[in-house]
Length: 59
Image (cartoon, rainbow, N blue to C red; front, side):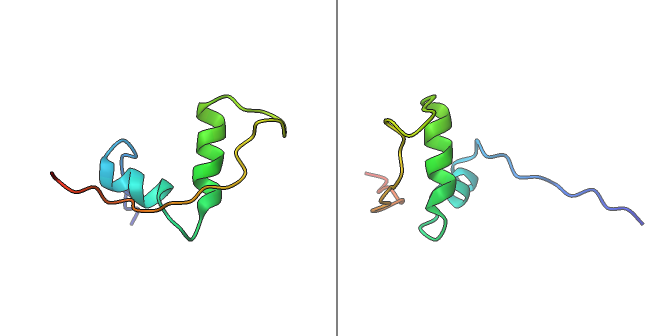
């Protein structure tokens, strides 16, 4: 029997943080940022990120 897998929407805050806010896999966030900013090649390319606190206080 084939079961359809539900995919999570990356536009949902929790899902976005799980994908792009992982300290274990910063290369995912780096690739995303370089793509969004249209940075190609080595000049100006983002090569490292530091995720200090991915959680925001409600206040």
